[in-house]
Image (cartoon, rainbow, N blue to C red; front, side):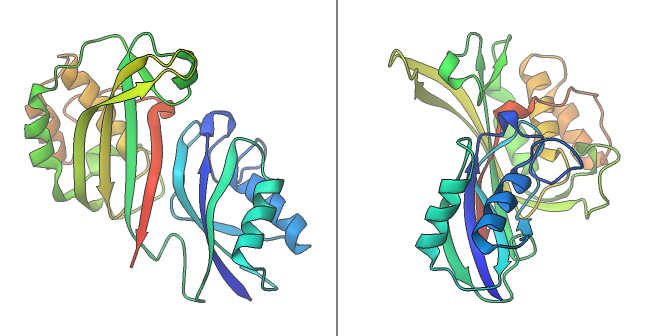
Length: 254
């Protein structure tokens, strides 16, 4: 068997997430359908991390095994020809038998984009609109508290698959970003939140962003958000941030 590493991008707007389901359109289903046509038999892919319905990816990583060797560039071209227009292959490379997209990963990075109304039509799939003016002066204190190794039990959804809640966060940043309206060329300013860690709990990023939103709109204090982290229990029940602003941008391996 030949093992491959595939880096994938997709617009998650019209997908019910990455993982295959009994019904509904998923990213894994789209990729495996294209692979089956290439290989002439069913092929199963393993992803670096699951993404929910509406979440995007620029650097999702898949591992798979093929019964015969196909040159990497040839496989990339064949896959891109067979995939739908909202999903594509960035790169393909042959890997050794020990490579596993999920278990071999040591770092994952997510980006979350949000901006005040109105968001240009060409950017609406990727930016969460907000109706408040973010008061970001408290962010440095939150950043200081969240960097490092912590138990993130307070920032996961109930009913998720049991997982070690202790994660090491190496990146926790917020900055403004200038984008361009695709149709008019006019500049548009949004906020870009980035977080990088060895792994994440289910809905962890969206819970953190939801809490940040409530701090920025003055509904809770930054001290309460930090206390939620340290106590491992929510001190304020914030709303889960919408999926559309979230994107998996990078996965790193040894």
